[in-house]
Image (cartoon, rainbow, N blue to C red; front, side, top):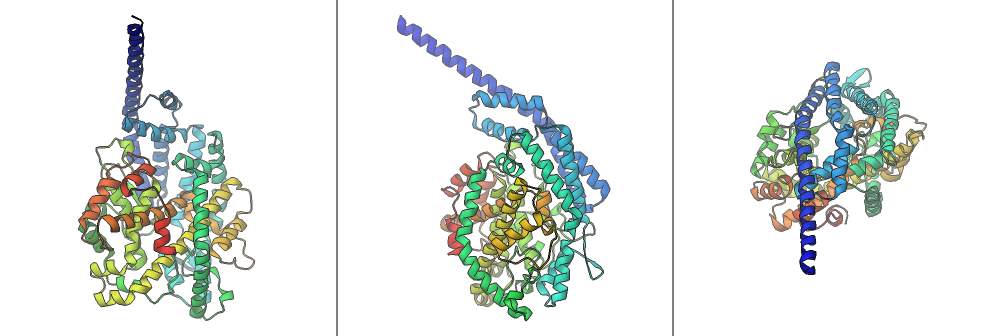
Length: 553
């Protein structure tokens, strides 16, 4: 009899637990249904408004973008909705994997907006005004207004010191126009982060994206150790080459001698002029053909994209998913050169990730596993622009030319990765320290980081907000770690594909590559967190060993 009573109690307890779990999961399903009714149309409206503003640059379109962005953000500021989410999360009763994953993402999204409405509105207002200023800015050099593309042309191709200096300084003049506003925005973001219980905005940004700041710090320190000696030796080679190129002594080299605005791309010190191979090519035709050949057709993306320069248009490049239902677009300012060939390959890497995410997934999971996982795909494809095998297979160069430039090209790729890794260090640590203390001398902090990681001296007596000339500091804050983590993962994917999918390093015509990426990376969207997705798709956790093997050792 006693055994029967105990069994009855256990059975009743299990039934009660099962019932409470079912009730809690139904509460979450109801929450998600109501959330999607509000979020989906406002998400699309905000994405479209931002797209239109970046294309036109008009004050009216930027005002519409600000309004739409605020309307979308207000969803996550709902305190009663967040209370419901918190109760569901703290119950610990969500067992369904898809529901649990949505709960995790939604909880972090709502948490980041649980502050006063005026604080969120103020942040959006400041960001929109800065977006407008960056979009409309054109450098003035010797009385002429020049686009970023034209500034880059001068820095890459001129050998006249006065012209190089004027172009470099002209581009940096956006700094004084926006620096005070950025500092105000940094403090404003920190206020929001503090009210939510975070150390500062940098800390909040990483944690809400699913990253541990201490772990990211450790990775960056490891990569600093991994690349420092190699970069120091490489920098000596760069300086020797550039000194000879400009007919000056290595000690006389200035930041404007490094062939781009921030020394974030490697100078062309090897005997391969990639631009000459693309001057008669159509980058759009090439990317369309390439992606179609690996089973990732991009025609629907290109059809809605804006690809060429226009007055008032954003001079950079990005890819955006307008509705998470197939409307994916990329903004570019394409010219027939290797830089823009890399860029359009890169942006369409983002594009195929979004476009081929399964639309059977819930709206919340129809995005990448993490920002750096989509950067990995973009980097994986972008670097093909200067791969001789890819260029040969795409009909850009002959077999003979491929053999001729192969050795130097591989050196150039390794150089570009090491140079970029040092630049990423500048951005990561500058932003980390800036958010820790925005009242410090940011002009000096910037050059401290440049001198430490890029080994470039500050021009004598220069005291300007050169840091503010980098648009990411203002509008894409605390994001640069994703590019470098993306490079690590891109090397890991490259190794996995070469080992298990195809030995053809150019990927051209290999539909198995597209099939693998669609199945293991794109289609699953955010169904798994980034760590699990990487392990499932490559068989191991994120590691720097393939990056080191490919570009450093």
